Length: 80
Image (cartoon, rainbow, N blue to C red; front, side, top):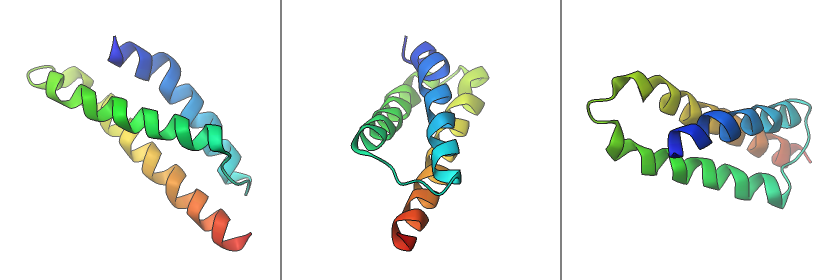
């Protein structure tokens, strides 16, 4: 269930937020809460991935995307 949520909801929304920060916009409260939830979900999923390596790239991609977004958001905040 968490994998489906990450794949169908989490990643598409994260890509929308990435586009927002790539445009130089700042994160709003909703964006921050959402990104925290994506990170929490990715951590919750990790124990279930043992032996299910077909999902490794999805989780790693989500965590990497989170890092890219937060780095760019921090850059936007410091420039504001």
